[in-house]
Length: 178
Image (cartoon, rainbow, N blue to C red; front, side, top):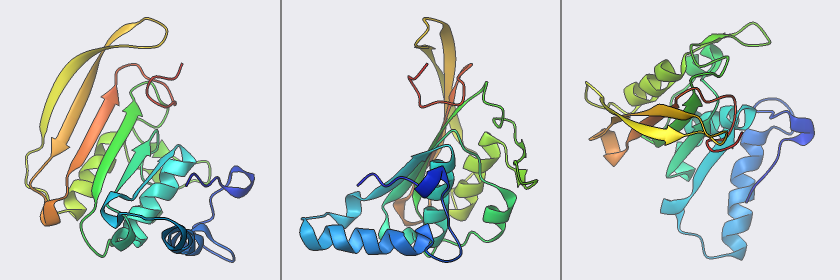
């Protein structure tokens, strides 16, 4: 299933919110199709990634893991994030994205850097330190050669893992998009 935010704005709280809708959607799909619960993931881009992060915090029992592309966790979400169990996380963030190094959201909320976001989830999953990392060459869609970085935490609680990819000189986009 590929839900979209109504009017492009995810609503994790309030009336008719998306966090209440998500389990209903999953249960409806499970009632119609053969679903392997161990293979259900939430992933999103930008504000959709923020929604997947909320899902990881609030609905961890329903998902095997979450993916976040071009979105760092906001302080208000981090302050209330208490997953019921460890959840695997993969994040992708371009180093040329305005929020790669953190900052302040449009609504004035502090935003973690991309690396702080990954480390936050590693802490939630009780991952042992230090993380591991490696660099590897990549070519952007415009032909520019760059170095990407993979940082990961393994042997985390419940068998979870946290993996963070930095796309060298990547913008606010899906990896591979211009």
